[in-house]
Amino acid sequence: MALGFYFTPQSFTVEQYDEVIRRLEAAGAGSPPGRSSFDKFGETLIPIMAELGTDPGEPQVAEIHNVIIR
Image (cartoon, rainbow, N blue to C red):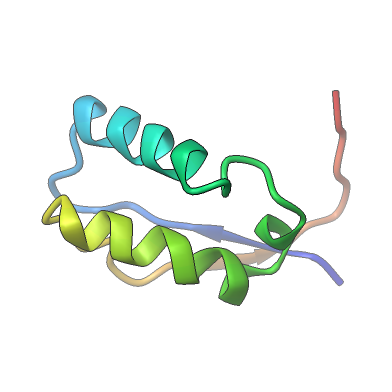
């Protein structure tokens, strides 16, 4: 069963989001196989968000019914 983790950080600007994406790409975690594993992906994502002063908050977790890949 696949799970989706949805975060709604309190003060997360578009600029911060773009910087997180840039840093994930630079860290080789933009689209790695581990991104399907929340624990593994979180090892890279959470420290980047902390460096930017953003607390992701608690995730909403939902079961994924279908995945469509381009």
